[in-house]
Image (cartoon, rainbow, N blue to C red; front, top):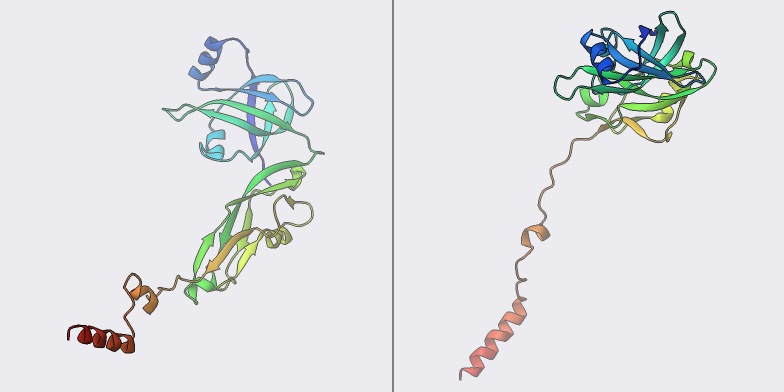
Length: 223
């Protein structure tokens, strides 16, 4: 997958006033850690980051992080902090990613095409899962997983095992292979009320013979 390159600078790791000054300059305070390296305080320009991250997004993008006068490394965003009112990015935690070690990240699953079960058979298309967790080497990580659902008919589905076949052996989906991702369901039939349901709550009528015997007894007793 194509990497987004992020330029960073080493910043002074002073107190709150230093952090405030960094934000006022239009930069975002950050820190880089993990992967056997030292922890480095950084500052980055949010212009490239914000559109990729999104405030509600899961942070599964791999970035090519270039530190001015320092290292260049693959990294993921382990945590992003946002201002609760203004919605601006206020802090980032970058985690190093080693090229020879597998990583485990969530990936979005998208669908293309109009299922025949909807178009021709009147069914409804339902999305059960919008992402799955994958494990692979960094260079094998796809940007997203895309499934063509055009051939899905009524009652048919796409499971994790079906998705696994499309990504190959280099990418392992770390979930139950029987779990359903997409499926086509029948429209719910309108249940007609049964006679038993209609009569529920009503006292059962006495048999005709019993009614006649009861009437005879009442007539005899009145004599």
